[in-house]
Image 1 (spheres, helix red, strand yellow):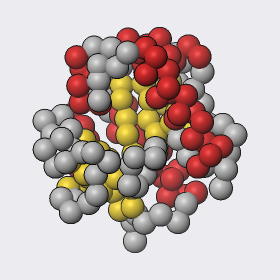
Image 2 (cartoon, rainbow, N blue to C red):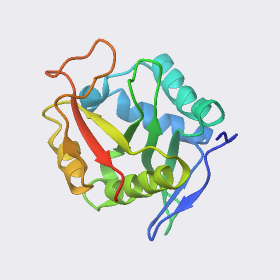
Image 3 (cartoon, one colour):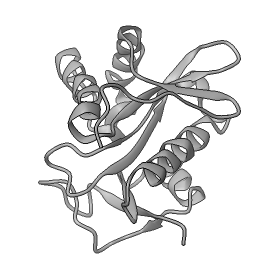
Image 4 (cartoon, rainbow, N blue to C red):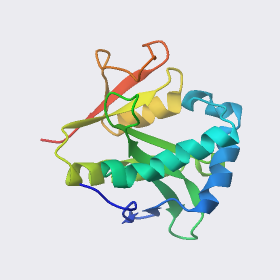
Length: 174
């Protein structure tokens, strides 16, 4: 399975679409702050460029990657969701991030559910994980609301341990 770009997905309130250049500035602004401590940051602009380029480049290389997320009502860019597996991840990860102004409206759950449903429909994978920094209570709660369960025995990204990374496993419904 390969794609040249992310397919466009729609939900009741959101559009998940291929990243565009204008996504970089708001994502970099977020990842440059202390809020990014739960996502490997703060991240300098050069590194952020590589992160986004890798997630876009993942589509033709692996057949999955990240989407930019927009609100359907006004086209506002609100964040990112994706299934990614960089070289140092032992298995694909479902991840999400919203810009500050758009938290607390259920958008992350809606976007993550759409990305996960797309993954189930387009792969034969039986599970996908979410790597979450312990203490990131909002992401931990969202993973649980999505039906994921803590998997203490799962492998973590290269160089990470249980104190740095909790693994929440999402399983395909029977």
